[in-house]
Image (cartoon, rainbow, N blue to C red; front, side):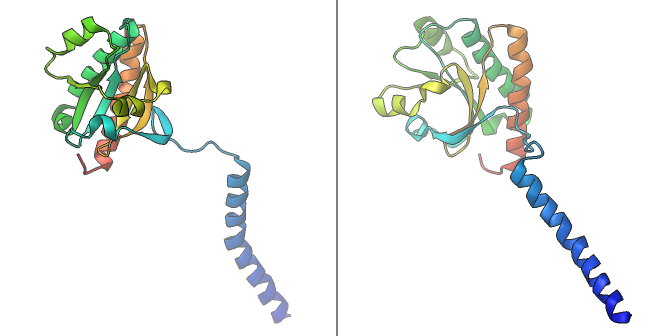
Length: 185
Protein backbone atom coordinates (compact mmCIF):
# COMPACT_ATOMS: atom_id res chain seq x y z
CA UNK A 1 0.00 0.00 0.00
CA UNK A 2 2.84 2.36 0.84
CA UNK A 3 4.33 1.91 -2.64
CA UNK A 4 1.08 2.94 -4.30
CA UNK A 5 0.76 6.13 -2.19
CA UNK A 6 4.34 7.15 -2.93
CA UNK A 7 3.75 6.69 -6.67
CA UNK A 8 0.62 8.85 -6.49
CA UNK A 9 2.53 11.46 -4.51
CA UNK A 10 5.32 11.50 -7.09
CA UNK A 11 2.81 11.84 -9.94
CA UNK A 12 1.06 14.66 -8.08
CA UNK A 13 4.31 16.53 -7.47
CA UNK A 14 5.35 16.06 -11.11
CA UNK A 15 1.94 17.32 -12.29
CA UNK A 16 2.21 20.41 -10.10
CA UNK A 17 5.50 21.36 -11.73
CA UNK A 18 4.99 20.14 -15.29
CA UNK A 19 1.35 21.09 -15.90
CA UNK A 20 1.85 24.90 -15.60
CA UNK A 21 4.79 24.78 -18.00
CA UNK A 22 2.76 22.79 -20.52
CA UNK A 23 -0.20 25.18 -20.21
CA UNK A 24 2.07 28.21 -20.65
CA UNK A 25 3.62 26.69 -23.77
CA UNK A 26 0.16 25.90 -25.15
CA UNK A 27 -1.02 29.47 -24.44
CA UNK A 28 2.01 30.95 -26.20
CA UNK A 29 1.71 28.70 -29.23
CA UNK A 30 -2.01 29.39 -29.67
CA UNK A 31 -1.74 33.12 -28.86
CA UNK A 32 -4.47 33.00 -26.22
CA UNK A 33 -3.45 36.42 -24.91
CA UNK A 34 -2.30 39.73 -26.34
CA UNK A 35 1.41 40.35 -26.27
CA UNK A 36 2.47 42.82 -23.62
CA UNK A 37 3.58 46.03 -25.32
CA UNK A 38 4.10 49.17 -23.35
CA UNK A 39 5.28 51.42 -26.15
CA UNK A 40 2.76 53.90 -27.52
CA UNK A 41 4.31 54.32 -30.96
CA UNK A 42 4.46 51.82 -33.78
CA UNK A 43 7.53 49.63 -33.39
CA UNK A 44 9.51 49.59 -36.64
CA UNK A 45 10.54 46.09 -37.68
CA UNK A 46 13.27 46.15 -38.77
CA UNK A 47 14.62 49.40 -37.41
CA UNK A 48 15.65 52.04 -39.96
CA UNK A 49 19.35 52.81 -40.03
CA UNK A 50 19.70 56.58 -40.31
CA UNK A 51 23.47 56.62 -39.85
CA UNK A 52 24.04 58.34 -43.23
CA UNK A 53 21.78 61.18 -42.07
CA UNK A 54 23.25 61.60 -38.57
CA UNK A 55 26.86 60.44 -39.09
CA UNK A 56 28.25 63.94 -38.42
CA UNK A 57 26.02 64.50 -35.36
CA UNK A 58 26.75 63.76 -31.70
CA UNK A 59 25.09 60.59 -30.36
CA UNK A 60 21.75 61.59 -28.85
CA UNK A 61 18.21 60.36 -28.70
CA UNK A 62 16.27 62.19 -31.40
CA UNK A 63 12.64 63.00 -32.07
CA UNK A 64 12.73 63.44 -35.84
CA UNK A 65 10.37 64.92 -38.40
CA UNK A 66 11.14 65.33 -42.11
CA UNK A 67 9.55 68.41 -43.69
CA UNK A 68 7.64 67.56 -46.90
CA UNK A 69 7.28 69.67 -50.07
CA UNK A 70 4.18 71.40 -48.72
CA UNK A 71 4.08 71.98 -44.98
CA UNK A 72 0.35 71.70 -44.21
CA UNK A 73 -1.38 71.72 -40.80
CA UNK A 74 -0.18 68.19 -39.99
CA UNK A 75 3.40 69.22 -40.74
CA UNK A 76 3.19 72.34 -38.58
CA UNK A 77 1.58 70.34 -35.77
CA UNK A 78 4.35 67.73 -35.98
CA UNK A 79 7.05 70.39 -35.68
CA UNK A 80 5.17 71.95 -32.76
CA UNK A 81 4.74 68.52 -31.11
CA UNK A 82 8.39 67.49 -31.24
CA UNK A 83 9.36 70.87 -29.82
CA UNK A 84 6.83 70.58 -26.98
CA UNK A 85 7.93 67.03 -26.16
CA UNK A 86 11.52 68.21 -25.98
CA UNK A 87 10.55 71.05 -23.60
CA UNK A 88 8.48 68.67 -21.46
CA UNK A 89 11.55 66.48 -20.87
CA UNK A 90 12.87 69.12 -18.47
CA UNK A 91 16.26 68.17 -17.08
CA UNK A 92 16.59 65.36 -19.64
CA UNK A 93 16.63 67.79 -22.60
CA UNK A 94 20.40 67.53 -22.87
CA UNK A 95 20.03 63.82 -23.76
CA UNK A 96 17.43 64.35 -26.49
CA UNK A 97 17.28 66.48 -29.60
CA UNK A 98 14.16 67.68 -31.41
CA UNK A 99 15.36 67.32 -34.99
CA UNK A 100 13.83 68.52 -38.24
CA UNK A 101 15.14 67.11 -41.50
CA UNK A 102 15.19 69.32 -44.58
CA UNK A 103 15.66 67.87 -48.03
CA UNK A 104 16.02 69.75 -51.29
CA UNK A 105 12.26 69.31 -51.77
CA UNK A 106 11.20 70.59 -48.34
CA UNK A 107 8.86 73.58 -48.09
CA UNK A 108 11.16 76.61 -48.54
CA UNK A 109 9.07 78.94 -46.34
CA UNK A 110 9.17 76.54 -43.39
CA UNK A 111 12.85 75.80 -44.00
CA UNK A 112 13.59 79.53 -43.75
CA UNK A 113 11.52 79.85 -40.58
CA UNK A 114 13.20 76.85 -38.93
CA UNK A 115 16.66 78.34 -39.34
CA UNK A 116 15.84 80.89 -36.61
CA UNK A 117 14.37 78.33 -34.15
CA UNK A 118 16.75 77.87 -31.25
CA UNK A 119 15.40 74.65 -29.69
CA UNK A 120 14.99 72.72 -32.92
CA UNK A 121 18.01 71.09 -34.48
CA UNK A 122 17.85 71.34 -38.27
CA UNK A 123 19.68 68.74 -40.37
CA UNK A 124 19.97 69.25 -44.11
CA UNK A 125 19.73 65.99 -46.03
CA UNK A 126 21.60 66.73 -49.21
CA UNK A 127 23.38 63.76 -50.73
CA UNK A 128 21.80 60.67 -52.24
CA UNK A 129 23.05 58.29 -49.51
CA UNK A 130 21.32 60.38 -46.87
CA UNK A 131 18.09 60.55 -48.86
CA UNK A 132 18.20 56.80 -49.51
CA UNK A 133 18.29 56.20 -45.74
CA UNK A 134 14.94 57.96 -45.38
CA UNK A 135 12.16 55.44 -45.90
CA UNK A 136 9.20 56.55 -48.03
CA UNK A 137 6.78 54.82 -45.64
CA UNK A 138 8.03 57.07 -42.81
CA UNK A 139 7.14 60.28 -44.66
CA UNK A 140 4.63 62.32 -42.72
CA UNK A 141 5.54 60.54 -39.47
CA UNK A 142 7.48 61.45 -36.37
CA UNK A 143 10.33 59.04 -35.65
CA UNK A 144 12.08 58.22 -32.41
CA UNK A 145 15.76 57.58 -33.15
CA UNK A 146 18.19 56.03 -30.66
CA UNK A 147 21.79 57.02 -29.97
CA UNK A 148 23.04 54.56 -32.61
CA UNK A 149 20.94 56.34 -35.26
CA UNK A 150 18.31 53.62 -35.53
CA UNK A 151 14.74 54.81 -36.04
CA UNK A 152 12.80 52.47 -33.78
CA UNK A 153 9.35 53.96 -33.19
CA UNK A 154 6.99 55.81 -35.53
CA UNK A 155 4.13 58.14 -34.58
CA UNK A 156 1.39 59.55 -36.82
CA UNK A 157 0.85 63.25 -37.42
CA UNK A 158 -2.52 65.00 -37.20
CA UNK A 159 -4.10 68.00 -38.90
CA UNK A 160 -6.14 68.75 -35.77
CA UNK A 161 -3.97 70.56 -33.22
CA UNK A 162 -5.72 69.04 -30.19
CA UNK A 163 -5.21 65.52 -31.55
CA UNK A 164 -1.55 66.33 -32.19
CA UNK A 165 -1.14 67.52 -28.60
CA UNK A 166 -2.90 64.42 -27.24
CA UNK A 167 -0.67 62.10 -29.24
CA UNK A 168 2.50 64.00 -28.37
CA UNK A 169 1.92 62.66 -24.84
CA UNK A 170 2.50 59.20 -26.28
CA UNK A 171 5.85 60.31 -27.67
CA UNK A 172 6.76 61.86 -24.32
CA UNK A 173 5.84 58.67 -22.44
CA UNK A 174 7.98 56.52 -24.74
CA UNK A 175 10.96 58.89 -24.63
CA UNK A 176 10.85 59.09 -20.83
CA UNK A 177 10.68 55.31 -20.55
CA UNK A 178 13.62 54.84 -22.92
CA UNK A 179 15.70 57.47 -21.15
CA UNK A 180 15.01 55.80 -17.81
CA UNK A 181 16.14 52.43 -19.16
CA UNK A 182 19.14 53.79 -21.08
CA UNK A 183 22.29 55.29 -19.67
CA UNK A 184 23.53 56.15 -23.16
CA UNK A 185 23.06 59.58 -24.67
